[in-house]
Length: 149
Image (cartoon, rainbow, N blue to C red):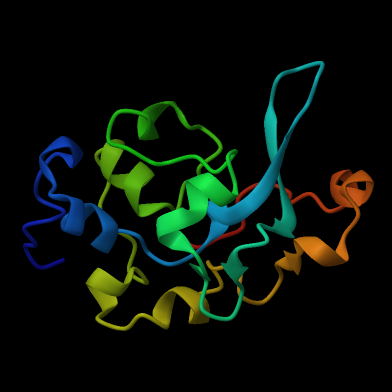
């Protein structure tokens, strides 16, 4: 992987623009999560946030997302290490854990579509929140980590 000023620095040292550029565009963080009451474990559903443009895998109202969806979690260098529900493929999590970006990450491949072709994004399976009753969300869990590294 070529040297890149973003990935060769600690997350805490990134500028806001560099932080945003690190997003791989998978949109897995935009899928609804459920917490198992008994174990406390957080599981991910196939149900996408109502603000997610599923074709682009980007938030339709990114700047207003925290006001419009109060449960939307803002990723920061400080909280990424504690968010164990982030997929192991997530660029923020990978760098926080001292790993390199995956081959399909747009900063490595040079192609923003590589994350989708690699099957890492939610583009081909996420369901619109409006189409699924919340009582049915537990029936639509994602089992484990099936994304390529």
